[in-house]
Length: 153
View (cartoon, one colour):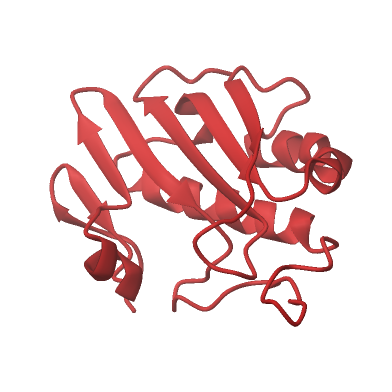
């Protein structure tokens, strides 16, 4: 898989198999807004970073890698935004989808502050507990909207 890249001036892809299978881009620019599809814990080669161990029914049974998965998702968002000349400081709204709310709350403050590079990120944020995400060992997915030039810091 190649690094994230623009297929045309407004649409970005990672080149991972699930884009083709599901039929979607990772990010789309419309005017000064960038809409980023849910990002999760995969590296530039499409391998999962810090996958959660699964029980006999294929469900995560250990949530201790939530923080590392969250950091990887923010790194992926930052990489996609950079394709458009934007940064995480341009993000105005985000939604975190998590499998375990307690595990997320244990790390989300520290990880978000580090990702945004400040103690009080100026980004509207939602966190939603879900029963399953696309990849079984996945604990979190983050989607967001950025406005180029807003530098919401």
